[in-house]
Image 1 (cartoon, rainbow, N blue to C red):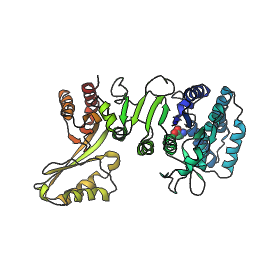
Image 2 (tube, rainbow, N blue to C red):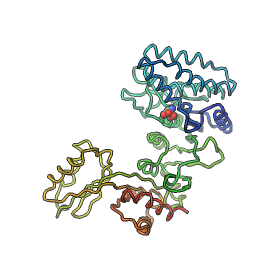
Image 3 (cartoon, rainbow, N blue to C red):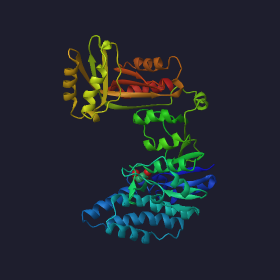
Image 4 (cartoon, rainbow, N blue to C red):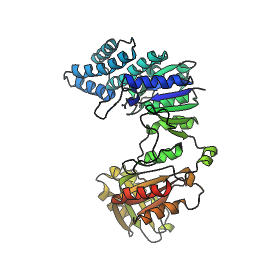
Length: 436
Ligand code: ASP
């Protein structure tokens, strides 16, 4: 069975990085399918080629001179092709792109050309076939991919190929890019289509971290995690690969392996489908901690709330009617709290509170602002007595007041609300308790 290897922008930023990628692919003949991003950043000051292409499109449309941008993009690719000693004519390729632009190509078309050219270059360097996803990743009118990827499977069958990431084609044949970072999705679709043994996602870090390195100093790497755990952590802000990229591979039961192009000897992070086998192997109670600040808790108190059918529904209707989605709704006998992300709430808080007060009369509605939510996630917590007690004890010992606690029904995550200003201290306290 084959391996699908996807390489991110920093792994393909210049000829030197390409050299590492070629060596990695050659090291295992099972790496038959390779998906690429556009050249990214090597240093924080660099610009991603995708951004340069988008600048070019904007400039052109505003009637501004574009030569400088076009030359800068050309220079990035010429450095790669020359450094690798390849024959691909970048100037001719760039002229074709410019010609399409004059013929009214969309900004999606332009944005996709970084992946298009990188795939052509890597295919030549490896002696693999080049595959343009415009011909085999078909999207619906809204730009969504379908789970029926027969075209893609047929295009890949029996080949060794480099596929450009980040885009597919709409029913009218025009190019449509995914959201930013979307080459991860292409990689997952290819892995699903060829029923890969593994989906390798090569990047510039040695895997996922157990906590945010801006909060916890030198956090450890996660060696193994399930897709369900990762979903919880990613939702709460842990930075991983594209959030949508996990669904095609999770559905197909394929493992994703995050690895570092610059340190291929590092073990990386394996993301596995949830199966009893892996759960038993996990001896760490907690896989990771993630969190975000700036939530608001709306608390509703009313006697005999528990006897009143439809009470919760009335509250949620007020929120839904204003186009707001909520995060959690923990409740007690006569209380109900709704936790909402401030980005959702915007300036609607006063209106929401007034309406809930009216609907819940004669209850009492109070508001708590500036709350941070911390997600403590671990398949090791399932059926383990005392895991949540340890989390709460760690926070109590750090002298932090807990505003709200919500345990997910899967028992795999505990959400704790603290004041924004206590967030970092709380995360560090939990980390110290569980990770040594
Ligand atoms: N090149 C695109 C971006 O910068 C897609 C990707 O790298 O995955 O977002």
